[in-house]
Amino acid sequence: MTLPIARLYCGLTLLHLFAFGCGGGADGDGGSGGSGAGSASGGAPVELETSDVSYDSSAPEDPLRTLDVYSLPSSAAAVPVVIWVHGGGWFTGDKANNMARKVELFNGEGYLLVSLNYRLSPEPKASPAPDRVRFPTHPEDVARAVAWVHENAAAYGGDPERIALLGHSAGAHLCRLGGHGSRLSGAVRSRTQ
Image (cartoon, rainbow, N blue to C red; front, side, top):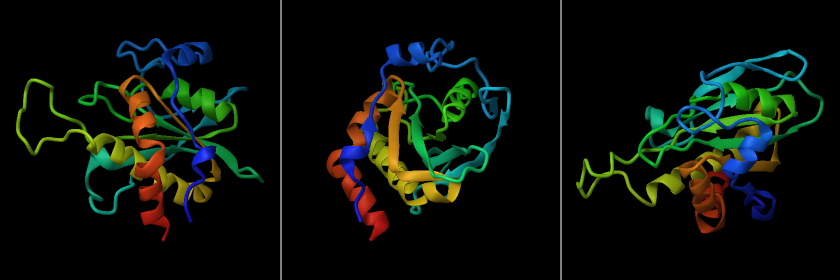
């Protein structure tokens, strides 16, 4: 089974984040700060369902290859899924940064929200070491996370056939690089065969 690539929507511009009310955090990654729970439309609390889930079985203890799942209260039908990829210039950032308003927005609109980490490169001028984390590691991590979500979304009430991949800054770039084509197809194929 392969993920229907045509149904995976990639990228999100900063302009869209501001239009949806998620932009403007001090680090440029949106939100009002903090991580964890938010409140959906109407004031109902939305809790973090599961945190620090490894999406890469080859490195289950690596915190930079984990994701958090923000679920909705039980629903009779599977809901669409939004996967969030943080920004940070490929060398900083975290899946939990400024998530409260994103959780409020996406859960409030009826989406299961997943926020992921990916391996980070060292500060650009700090490490010329040939074994440092660098391209294509970042988009490959995103592709592995998307494959994991596709395979496991139903367990959290999500619809694996309706996945949107969104990100900010470097995260949006990684959505574009890792969220389609051969990287994603290969990652999905290897996880579902």
